[in-house]
Image (cartoon, rainbow, N blue to C red; front, side, top):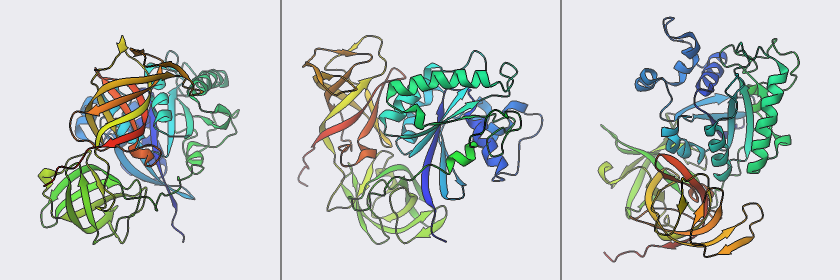
Length: 422
């Protein structure tokens, strides 16, 4: 059996539009989970319960962190990342989207729901973060206000198509699926409630996503998601290989820490690996650096081509929302790969037309909502970020401030921080 292609998939969309229920139903119908919660739990939350296994999430009734698990389709191995829709948790969603190869946008057909603020924000983000494969689940078709009617599905489809077009997707190439996570319509099994729909089920759509080419020949980059100290094992780092190849016995460098370590072993899904390639979510057992020194957002590379610690970087950004205007001196938090860092905007080089890239104004004094611009940022502390052209997953970022995503962008150039002589 040749190994199946591995695709990382994220579910995005507004809070309460049924993402977790849809994923829970997918796992349940594929018999990946046996148990459902006790009956006394609200009936309409029973499938979300499968996903929101973290106790805190069950108590608060919303998806907080990212939940990873695997779904096998006939030709693909899909790692599902459930992204939170609640606005407080957008930064987790950004971490998820920056790892995703494809996305399912969930939009509720229920009367009064449809496209919401978060739907728009998530669509903007996944596009800016380079997720080009997309399908749309028009969910809650079973709701009494919808009654499985084709007219409501077509109405939502038209609205979402318009939004996708504005952002730069081609709706004619995107599959829309009318679903009910609660009842299971068109999730894994074809629905008899919507004879008017003859397209694929959600599960069948998952099988059509393709894995991106593996950048094996590029230098190694692994943004760190977590670090553990395991008794009897030692320090274990968890992260996803974005580029390059890692093997047991390799010497690695962790930036911006600037320290080297030896890789003792590599595991994925509890199995030992002889080599890890792009797309693999792995645990790395290292020796030579203490757990306390390493943190989420640090990046692993090989010493002969270490990750770039930026002194400053030039980026192209799109301002999604901001109550007033953004001017040089503005210091938001930049979220890139698994890290985040306060960065000061030192200059606005030019304002550009987001669609054509033509320069509209040189050195504008400010930019505001809807503007696209070339700007320069300086991280306040050492931070790893790379050119988008060389390392796309480490060159995309979101700009967060006041609890909202203010802008999203890609890195055009990086001025490296000079190493202090030891």
